[in-house]
Amino acid sequence: MRAKVKEVSVDMWGGFKKVIREVFPNALIVIDRFHVMKLVNSSLNQLRLKLELKGLKNRCLLLKNYVDLTPEERRDLKLLLKASPCLSIAYELKEELRDIYESSTTVLRGMRRLKKWLNSALIVFGKTAQTLKHHLPDICHYFINRTTSGVMEGLNNRIKLILRQSYGFKNFEMMRQKLLACLFI
Image 1 (cartoon, rainbow, N blue to C red):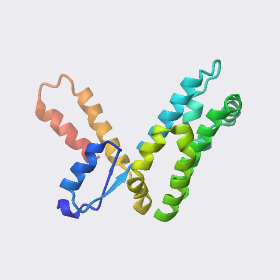
Image 2 (image 1 turned 135 degrees about the horizontal axis):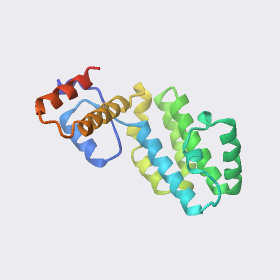
Image 3 (image 1 turned 90 degrees about the vertical axis):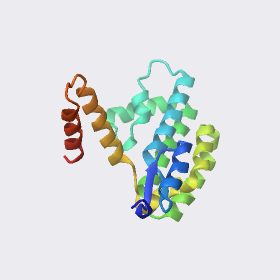
Image 4 (image 1 turned 120 degrees about the vertical axis):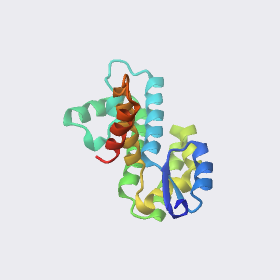
């Protein structure tokens, strides 16, 4: 059964790859796009904190996708980015990376665009860009089937919620039934 697993989507933690290769020898390792974006967003936020831009409500504006911003938020973002050219470049790079994931239709196109992006991102994102460069082949596997670990992440969150709500259950079997029901809803 394990030999039939074709893809496994994970974050960039080093231990996963070793385990996956042992347990699922035929599986392609895909670095989850949401974990890549989370790492870039974290670096963008660190840059924002380092710049200490006072008086501007900016964290949410920077981390939200541009397409999801309201007209008022876009106006505020424009003011924020005008105040810091460095932050503006970092934000544009973050949005460009999101666009690479959204619009690259082949592995080759995705890899070319990611390599170009990484060359630009090294200056602004430094260590984060180096980390992504190190994982580039597995990041590019995303473009084969666009596999993510979103379903499993959601399932894990539901299980954690049930376990929190189950605190105080006197009957383990009742908690077990609730967890199993969660899996099939």
